[in-house]
Image 1 (tube, helix red, strand yellow):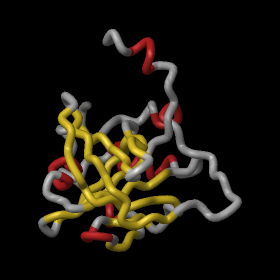
Image 2 (spheres, one colour; image 1 turned 45 degrees about the vertical axis):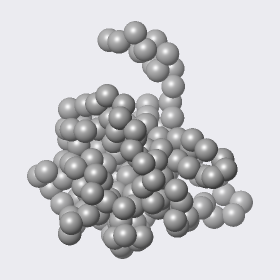
Image 3 (cartoon, one colour; image 1 turned 180 degrees about the vertical axis):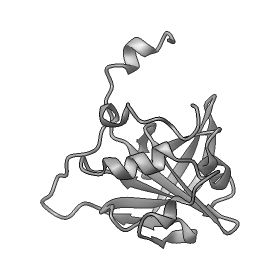
Length: 162
């Protein structure tokens, strides 16, 4: 337990699948640390664990794709959060297509954006990737899907320790 746990234990933000491609390799992982961080210019930061295979691929990538998971996409969260790309090709199990810079776009996720990596922020055991939007697929007009939240994936056994 850390001194920050009493504060963070009450938070229940959405979870995302972040994908990357570089050097002929693709990777993706479940991410709980992510947020818009600037309005003008628009920027978003995702934090990747340095122990994660996706981090290794993302270090050499130009773009990352951030997928917003719906409440009914627990199996997708389990694949990208419970398996590691060190041992499994997660993309053999899902439909996807290459986006900007080859960054994989998952077919079954309807809300996503691809961002050009503008910078990196050291944050301890995670590194923040500052993204400038390059391609955006917003939710369908008039819809507000229920998002998959941290509390719903808290039981997942991670592919890598944090």
